[in-house]
Every structure is written in C-alpha cells, then in structure tokens.
Image 1 (cartoon, rainbow, N blue to C red):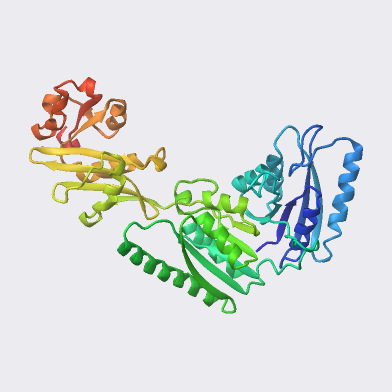
Image 2: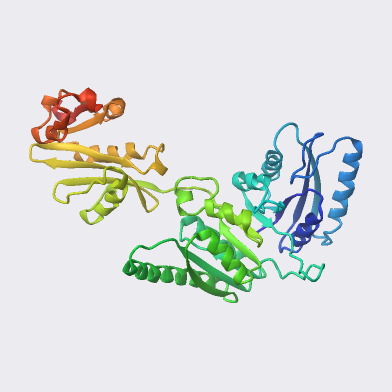
Length: 438
C-alpha cells in the first residue's frame, strides 16, 4: 500500500524515531527525506529557528546523511531533498514536493508545545488539510516517570482503532485494512452523538450493531486471521475516539479524512479527523479518499414528506399536506438537502417551500429542485410569490411578474396582511404558463 514515502524532517531526535518506523513498514520501495531551508529569522518545517549560509547547508546534509544511515534495508531506495523556501510557507513547500514526487504516504511528526494542548503544529495541520495522499501523524514515544528509557514499541499496525460512521469515505478507508501487514486486531468504533427518545435510541443501537457486524464480516472474509472487535460509545466522537484509543492501548488510530457531513459538504478535512490528528496520543493514519458525490433529485412519496419537514425546520417550521402537496427533493448521496413544493389549491397551483440547508447552499441544489418541480408540474399554470431579489432567478424557469390581482384568490390570501403593498413585503407575484398555452 505504501511503496513511496515522503518524510518532511526537521533533523530532530523525533525524526530518527519516525524514520525507524518508516523503514519497518512492509513493501516500502523508496523513502524521500525532505528538509526545507528558510531564511534568517524564519523557522524550519516544524518550528525550529532557521539559519542561512554555507555552514547551515553543510550541517543539514550531514544530518540528512546520518538519518539516511538509519535505513538499513538495501531494498529501500533513499533520496535526500533539500528545498529552499522562497517566501512561501513551509507547508506549501512540502506540498510542492509531494505534488512533484507523488508519494503514496506522507509521514509527519507531531510536537506538543509547553502551553498548548495541541500535538500537531499549524504546518502539520495545513499539510493534513491540503494533502492529496494518505498521511501518517507520528507521536514521540512516552517515557516512564521512573525511567528515562523509551519502552520497546509494538508494530505500528498491530492493534488498530477504526472509527466508523458508515459514510462512503469511511467504507473506502476501511477497505485499506485488507492491504496492511502485521495487523492482529481491529476495533470498529461507532460513536452515537445524541438520541432524544429512549425508543429511538434502542432502535438506532440495533441498527448500528447490524452495520458494525456487516463491516466485521467484510474484514473477516478478506483477513480471517485478524480479530475484529465491535464497540459503540455515546457522546463526542473526538473525545470517545481518544478515550478508547487509550483504554484499549491501540498502536494506531486509522480513519477516513472525512466524516459523513464533511464529505457531503466538500470540506477538505473533517472536523473530527482534524481534532484526533491534533490531540490524540497515538499515531494517526488519515486515509485519503476522493470526493465523488452522487447527486440526484426526485419527487418524494407522501411517506417521505418528513424529509422535507426536517429541512423546513429553519423555514418557518413549514408542514406538509399529503393531500395537496407534491414535493421534489435533492439528495446528496442519501441525504436530503434541498426541497421545492407545488401546492394544489382549489383555484390554482402555488410554488413555495423552496429551501436548502444552510450548509449546502451555493451548489445549485435549489435550481435542481425547482427544475424537477417544473418538469413534473409544468403542464399546469404555476403561481408563486418571489422574493424581489430572486425574480430573475425564477424568470429563468419561465416565470414572469404579474399584478397581485392576477393571482388566484386562495393564493392571494396568503399575503393579505400586506394590504396590496407587495413592495413593502419585498415580494413579487409571478406566474408560469405551460409552453403549449403561451
């Protein structure tokens, strides 16, 4: 899985620890040791004071050669790269090298400041956010209180904690376990954030248990020698992941770059993954997966109207009517994100309830919902009240402004409180006539 590894190094003692671990990974063919030089007054890749001049360059190459000597496997090619930072940030220099070299894994060390709870500096966080490959965040081995020596560490992949939220990225990341050598145990952890009613919680727990069991069977079929343990916790995913990793004394936390909502919103690095990488006391392997969303729109059945009502919670808590309504919904993967409604009144058809969850706005989902509605209901004359700023938007679907008196009476009643002053209400009555009737 990891044939070509890039290791940005600050030439510290921790770098030696990282390189020894990297050299012990199976199937490694090439290791690139990268050091970024900075100018006077700046700092190096992980916060050490920068220097300049020939003495600095000579010292850097000496230390890099010493680090290279730690890799004793003759089958592994080791290349040394020293890159000067010309005004750009250190993470940008690392990412530039990664873009050129195309490694299958980047290994970074994590530091902890004396007054900081974070174990991953800003440079490491930036690489984690913008990197386009798998990234392993290593920790310094912890020394005992009564002994200055470092205890012998088990194999990196011996006991893996895998947080599983059943999202597409998590499932893709889970498949990577099949390719890892040296794994003897995997813990599948699902964290339930909050269930309001006891009966809902019991139902949800049973569903989670089933899905965890299905994931366990997938691993067992491919790697029957691996013990798979299922675990359910309640509360904050980040806190529970860190707690379980300590309680179970895992050797590695392995997780997808995105959680479900991060993936759907196209966030480059999931919130939970970012927190775990920064603050967990265990090595964290972040699996990179491409974002390839399945987006589709369809009319809801009346049994699915609760999808729309969930979206309408922030839209005057609008309710649906199975008798009068036709509702069209946009789904991102299996998540409903935007809706539009056609309401049948005794004397006409009204378009309203056009709403997109805040987190998903700016992606054209409302346009998709209205397009499906017009296609499904466009054989009827459609009426609506448009917010003044969206008149041109609705005009692109064939709606034209009309006088309020041209609206059917039951639709006109909705804005009777405006007493005919549509400008004060900041709305414009609009109508769409079927093409064959124009």
